[in-house]
Length: 474
Image (tube, rainbow, N blue to C red):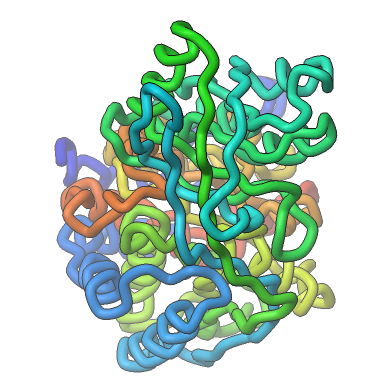
């Protein structure tokens, strides 16, 4: 990592413009906090705790499908690990979710060009009859095209959405491509279709389909639905150019209206401001195809590793740092919603939240979502992180999937943006395994999280849209 040790003078103080030049204020990071932050960064770049957490989780537990016995084992495992690491108030906060799991999945072109296709069922897919259902395929280039189609063209047939996804550094391509996964079955069902196939929401060229959730109420969606690998989607398109194509789709599932899940929580109790909370989180569950290393074992290792560095300091930070390993994110953000519901009375005590849920790539940008009066504090954080190769971002941070509910409730959030150009090569596939994590890039994440988390916890700065706290002007 370049410029690892080029941070010292940046940490001590910064001249920040608050919105407009006329609102400039001189805001200093106290020297003791600056020095401690420097030490945390150096230690983070040598992290072993966070990386070992991911390795052990993905090796000893493996896949952790929401609501499954495997997710339950992961909660028990995490509790034991966090207690052994010395965190305070380690616990599970329980909730229930609708449960879905695949039991079989296959697809085959029938007729004169008969051949197998590589697919994976989408979360919430309905089962087909034993032996599968067979129907003619109708191809669409987007969800919008399917939604606008004449029902007569789809009735009794399988809708096939063949929309590509493209690589972007910030993952913006996912937001566009994932709509077909969410909406295909519903749109096809409304027009009389019998099933849905989509080109996988992913960016790699191998015969490796990507699973993921579809829109649903409760455990099941509207129709049987599956994702094709990219090469198999290409194959179907070529076959359709030669004439009608029929496919036999065979999917088996098990489901339940309610299954146990929960959020794993650990803390570093603060001192004089211990009732105020700095929250850093990830999600513990994963899809069932790989071992959930990038999505989101890495995120859990990053926040645990960063928090452990702070916990090992000679003195505790002023505010309480709360680490949350959310449950059941993949199937509907259930953990984030449960936490917000269970902690509704103390949301105004949450002073900052961040979530790591985009793999383990190098953090290249740091966005905030602070009140106008707190912009100088955000600027200091951004400048502190610049020597780690992190560029200053805007003030439009989304925070992350599970903490979105906190942001909407007024909690200030930050987004340490990871480089996601390769993330969707592995996302929701059997290829999401520990060997895909680059140790040096992972450790840069730990250093970034340790730095901004400690600054937020120990300065006492107010990041909401209120007058700046006295600490920030000393």
